[in-house]
Image (cartoon, rainbow, N blue to C red; front, side, top):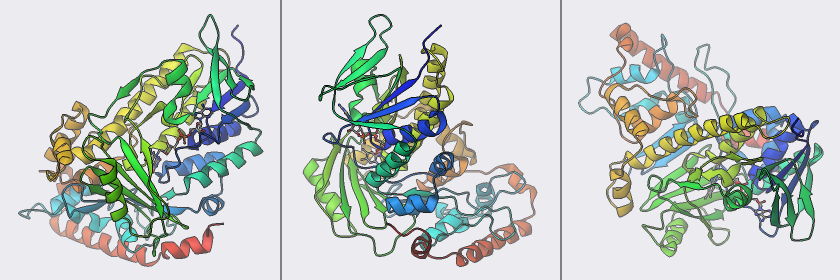
Length: 502
Ligand code: FAD
């Protein structure tokens, strides 16, 4: 009989460590003793402030009140990401979290829209967004909860959050400690392993303390102290497809109007983010050191700010890719220690959440069974690859050739899985997405169109309705959306009324 898993040790107290502690304490806290070790001297990566709608599910599972959470983290609502200058200079589109238009007879809306512009010599892909509730709300800086638009099947605003990363970790720390998680301060100096199985048995800290455990979760960030370091699990480098490897982050003053979206502006050797929070704005320039210098990147960042900088740019280095396996022996890596796909679509916090939930679903009662490990590794591997392809699409499908970086991205070889998706969409407007893909059809459609792929054809089922009916359907949708938006408060008013920052 294998020994029962009773003591869980989480090493690292950034966003990954504290989400892990919160979820385990909530769902397995009666069974496990949980200890989290972190070092204030080492600190956290300190970025990671934009999310995707799946975070709402995490909050629901944890029983977190949305307004309390936004007040504590100085958060705002996010309806999507505005991409500026990506497909070509001067272009702009919003990858929103919602559906565009409304599907009819099980045919996705964009096929009807494509049909409606099929007589035009050079149809403008941007026309699709005339039917986006999210786009109109974002443009008018409005936000509110709508279950449905009018009495139609069109759903209301799907949203996520922006928040202050350090306040978020503190919020989850308080949550976890309330549920029995012990926090130990100290720098890990050595890791002990069982002589026979090679499993981890304990960590020792610089201050002499020894923390033993049955299962270990490595949340040590890019260091990957346990999985990469002690267990020697290698790293699959994806920088040939996702060439950015550095970032400079700087806070600036609050935006005069709190817009409900992240902005990602393409630059000559990367891109710049702008994340609106209630008390400040988060900014960063993600770039490739192979195509620009750190000094030039800092100038680009500071020149691209919309409000006054509140400090000096802070450098961060990374290599895009993932660990070869995510769980080895009795240790799983969660967060940056498991890999990093760059922040373009705000997927890292989601990956933490999905890895934690998968690990909890497969968590062993006793021992360290290979079947559970294999299943965990198989699913995490697939998830990373799907997100990778979606990110590469933004860089690769571009008309930009105005810098060495963009020429590289445009002409680089990409995974066959992505080539297939782009070809399928270009030919027919169909999306060849896998069923468990994080990004829905609506996301792929918006980014493909936004980056400039206009499908040559549409689904023949969209021909089922008569031309006059189609015209009426589209006109009605535009009216409904305009009415729906007019009924919403401004984003600022919504925040002020429900969740002003503490
Ligand atoms: P860290 O924050 O680095 O935490 C590591 C922890 O391990 C710390 O507590 C540290 O003290 C501890 N530690 C390390 N070594 C030791 C040791 N020897 N002894 C004791 N403790 C130790 N994600 C998003 O979802 N949205 C975004 O908008 C986004 N933007 C990003 C922008 C950039 C430039 C980067 C690099 C990342 C971004 N991310 C984003 C990712 C996000 O920041 C991370 O996924 C998230 O912060 C989790 O980090 P972490 O907890 O894994 O690592």
